[in-house]
Image (cartoon, rainbow, N blue to C red):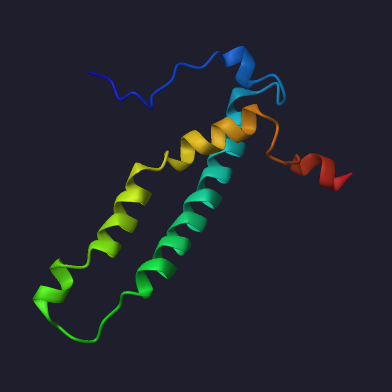
Length: 102
């Protein structure tokens, strides 16, 4: 059974702005890395609030708030899916390197 988050995309829709499928993939992957980095930093900051210098196993296993935060981030859509949606909605700004050189 396929993952329900997997979506078939029309390549003509993907290359509408770039005229090149590879450029589309590069733009979306760079945006996905940005999203992933931001989410990772946000999660680390939230979990840092629960950091404890005490090695008490009871306290570690009973921290429901920390578990709920982790589960929330696990259920979030993957960064690649979010980046592709943003790209298709025209929310991603990018420029070609050749254009900068001119």
